[in-house]
Amino acid sequence: ISILNGTVNMGGGSISSNTAIYGGGVYVYNTPDAEERGVSFSGGSVSQNRATYGGGVCVDGNISLTIGNVEIAENVATNGGGVCLLNNAHMSFGKGQIKNNQANKKDETLVSTGYQTDITELQGIGGGIYLNGASANTNITNTTFKLNTAVKNGGAIDSNAANIGIYNLTFDSNYAGE
Image (tube, rainbow, N blue to C red):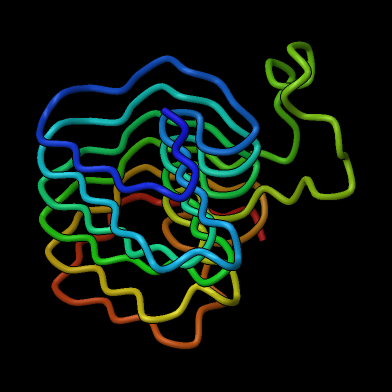
């Protein structure tokens, strides 16, 4: 699913086995001049997707992402195996599971299909979630991070965000290489 300057509301369902450069499962992008948009996922799963940015979900631009009771699992990306927030996107995530996601430096599947070409940006950060420096005001509550891995930084979460709140989380067997 790819949405430009729009709103997404998902209630239940499954998004799986997709490949893209941004957001293997879901990519929502707002142009710099667009007003803030809302994206909401309630229930369901985002799994087994692949991307360079945000294996499961990538949100880019002035967008408010709300996720509740969602499982984000077994996604693979270079940055943000499960979720990637870029360029002033912000998130509220509650009562979910982020598990078995991977952030790898190079993904041969993405290279062979043309979805990964810029080798200079391959970092392997944020196995579960990657928050870009401008992605402020992110809150994560009552969520389990389990078995997420990153080649470089942040097995569960890699954040450059100025304001991140984490409340009542469970971290179980996440791994970062550096």
